[in-house]
Image (cartoon, rainbow, N blue to C red; front, top):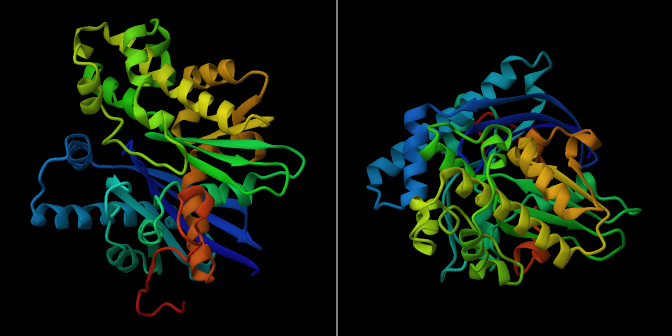
Length: 376
């Protein structure tokens, strides 16, 4: 397996937009990002998606299928905007890896289910590039959680035989990847909320997409009763493998846990949500990765200055820094991970880690959607 080009597309539970990263791999390892871009969702589409995830309303089939097509068009546009700036040979891009947009994730139901929309047929048609998508359901079919999937990429990119490490990905939900310094297997799981609760509260109370650099959270102290009630959630005491989503860690659920939420000072609530994210991530690392010497942070949370400072304070003396320190911009790690997963699928290689997801075995993930003229 020599040098190969793949394009990764990712939109997480924060639904801020679609990240696109054109990646060059050599011998299965990311060498460089040739171009990257974030395309925000149109505001009306984003609001519809957020309402579905946060409120879980009954959804008519005609609306679901229309959303599937509309989301795909945004994903394809994000890909084409990156490709429009690429001066190399577009024919050398072997495939697109598209995560899609998660609307529902319930792996602990019987049977476990998950749903990511963004029709890959449409992405392939609009870009002219074969598209790999629907990565999570094969793992679910094998008894796994279908998440998190990025730890396999984290292991390929960030592991070091001389140092035990942890990679934290902070999107709407936070997950960690434990990278030991010896031969023991990689582990990983969702720790709980990431930016999701903070973003929802900022959108509702400030009418802003997020708390810029965590300044609002930093302006107040946490509300002890609220923080204690949220930390008592049973999810935090469950053993891995485990994964979660905005259904379990969203404002609707918070109001059920703490009915007096809206009577509290809004800034104190925001600080409480920030402390919840930092505390649960740090606690997971202390419990499951006590030998870690370096913590690498990626995702949108890596750009929240106050949240990063709270993590650093709770994890000292462990070195805690964005993945930028190792040469990979924290913003593009997840998009690069799905480019990497597409590369694995196109080369007939497994993409999941059973020790992370709980699947019965490793498997080639997703489906390949050809353009009809593409040589696979």
